Image (cartoon, rainbow, N blue to C red; front, side, top):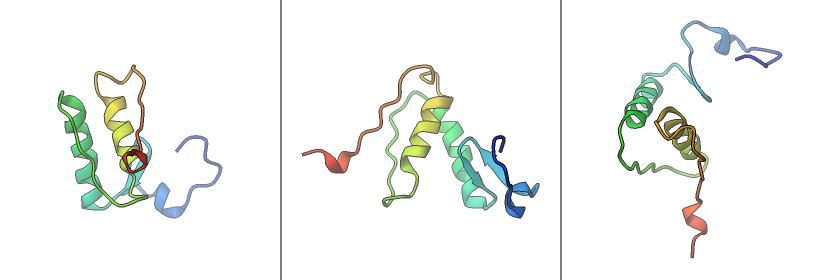
Length: 83
């Protein structure tokens, strides 16, 4: 939350969880945060599905950053744009 001039009431609430670039307090979001940690610990391929704007790239980037590959470059690919 550093670097933000104004914090909303929800963002300053102790019940709000911040996980890297994502903020949430819903049980489903907390489950996603745990899933990201689990995926980052393993050395498996991960398929992230969801509608446009759901945050798939943000989740992929967080998995990458938390994994042993974190220091390496991350390249996002828009599969819908592939021929």
